[in-house]
Image 1 (tube, rainbow, N blue to C red):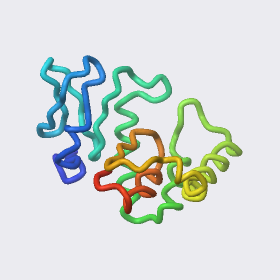
Image 2 (cartoon, rainbow, N blue to C red; image 1 turned 90 degrees about the vertical axis):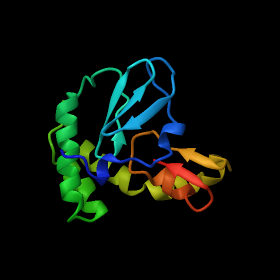
Image 3 (tube, rainbow, N blue to C red; image 1 turned 60 degrees about the horizontal axis):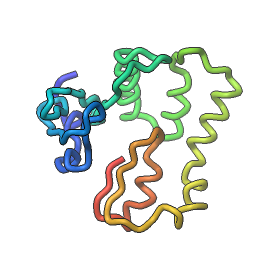
Image 4 (cartoon, helix red, strand yellow; image 1 turned 120 degrees about the horizontal axis):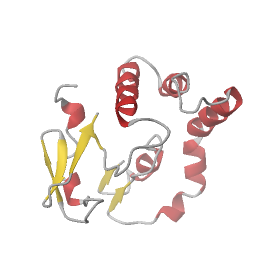
Length: 150
């Protein structure tokens, strides 16, 4: 995929990140982050990929292609439709239909679950949400946090 706005994370994100291999500071250049020791990590669809090891459930290139397909679909689907579409894509190993429905419900009810424990999130000036999910944790704090990335 050509360099685009999707491959440009927030300008100050490098200040929050460190190389997961050696702990050194990282700098963003073009479509990747690089530390002073030469370790490089790609930015795919605006998301830095700091994985040190291949995911045993999905090869890295397959994961990138899946993300690109989801990005294209996101331009024409609602969030709920996109979540449902995600679970129609191949998984390794295949996901049972009852589990797919459970995962879809889980994602679509994130806001209610997070609201139930929002007071436990703290009151800092910044929030870096590096977990898996739909960014609901970051969004829940965006009105009371001066800087956030998720």
